[in-house]
Length: 287
Image 1 (spheres, rainbow, N blue to C red):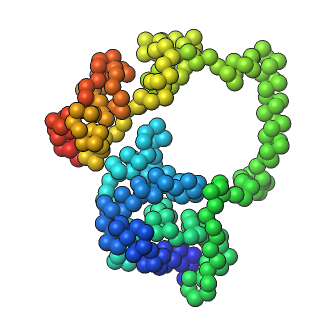
Image 2: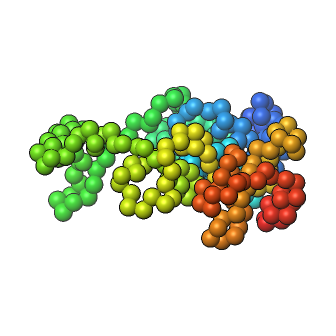
Image 3: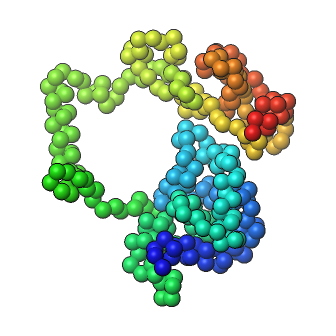
């Protein structure tokens, strides 16, 4: 049995051990919806770098949006192969899916690239497998290499990189650049880009029609967000306490949704509170 098949067998065996334990509500009869909710639950509490990387690779997060909400809005049918793998012994060939299942059932060592480098991964076939503890540290990787006309050559060492960086700074200084302006540029304004504001130096912009004076609250907190039928639209279910505001994109006429009240960042019009009517007509029926 090769390493990948052994990894699959280990994950499945771990599921059989864990399905009646801590997460039995999700694993004992794992529907796609339950597995998605379990992903959100585990992601919310994990601090393990390798596990966070597994979630990021599978869900392809937009870093500017709430990750829990992105998980809950993720296509539920994407978890049906998970269910079939655990209950019907169907095959899963994508390692990113296997790695996520390994997280859900607590199988170690994970991810697969770490497992296949374990000296006695064949232990699942009969010998005791040597499990390594999941540490809350970044993985230590071999020194990267690259191909050249002369064969495989190691990339520059950190010391060489620091030396080259220092020389570059000296060259910039000799050309009259201000190191202060390079490392500490003036950020006295904000500009809307796609789904959030970014800080800019207004003096560097040729066209400042869409720029605003610095507003730290907008910069830190105001975001355009994705919504779906599982989004929490009201605080404690109270329709008088909305958590989402909406407005129209002036170029497309389509509704856009934001996490705070205020003005639409492009049209400048006042955003409106979300209502059950808007949810039913434009969100739930859009799927």
